[in-house]
Image (cartoon, rainbow, N blue to C red):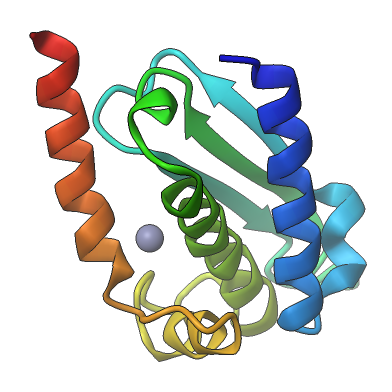
Length: 137
Ligand SMILES: [Zn+2]
């Protein structure tokens, strides 16, 4: 699998997702990398920002990790949905702060703006396990 081209495709999905969520101003701060250490989940997100003081809201980290191990086992639509799922987390944290529920109403609202059902999370969880099992065969 060509992870260079997957990385480029992923960045495009990040850009369109941020635009749909009216948060395209953070695009240049979002980093993506494919990790060989992620064997149990397709994607993860790392977001941190300054919580108080004059730099409140300033992003320290906006990072999306994607599983290099599981990526080949899922189809194009599932890859896209995984990235959108993670970007919606970034947008929700950025716009509502770090104390919200990860899969709460803010995240669900952004998933809705991207025309994805918010229960996709559970589908992805299931996929993770299936992909993981395939990998062990
Ligand atoms: Zn999630």
